[in-house]
Image (cartoon, rainbow, N blue to C red; front, top):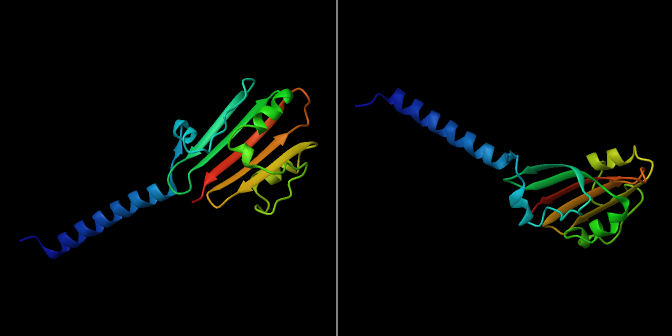
Length: 149
């Protein structure tokens, strides 16, 4: 017969391991590859002039795709015409928002001389995009989109 103390220790360790796994799954993970996000309508189809692309992806609860990249100014309309950016009704030259309050992108935008900003939410997706238009040779784009359903 196994002593009661060992049984209790065993159950405690099993509980800790299960809880740890659950917390890791809920928190998501920062993925090195964002390939799965193309099919989740979180990722943008980028213009051919895109340079210096940096992507970050989180899976799990509220999967999020973030990207930072540069485009040629003449490709701005092409970018704005890509899904899911086509859902955006209004682009603004300031970072005012009825959705976000002082988000990281809004803070970054307050430091820019010239910008375009837009956000969108439909209860499923929560999207934010900031474009630094200060340099007329190259625009810097900051994009974030989360599935919050």
